[in-house]
Image (cartoon, rainbow, N blue to C red; front, side, top):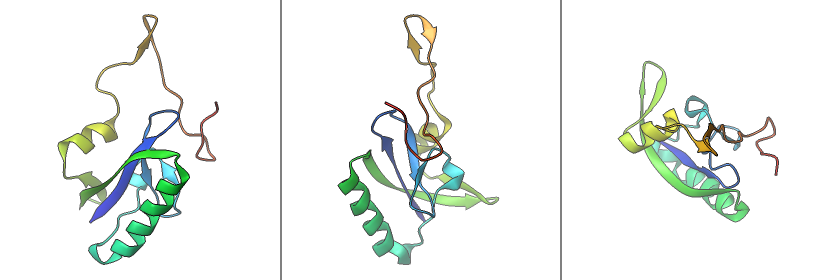
Length: 107
């Protein structure tokens, strides 16, 4: 089983493709592609690359454990959990912009 992941260009957020072909920040909302859905996965990759909004696209192998999506690679588990250290700006903790309800961030 696989999911698609990348980074939203403006915010830098780790995002996942969901069942409605939207990019979302919640790993558990990601669309899980079966091995026989490679054509659909590749079409989604091509469409995303053409849009330019999500970068650093990767196909990640996952398992389902207790109904939850669990990435096989430690790197992706860390990315899904968020930054491992607080982001700071001028000595203050900074919370980056998140995707809006429409899947976009303001600029």
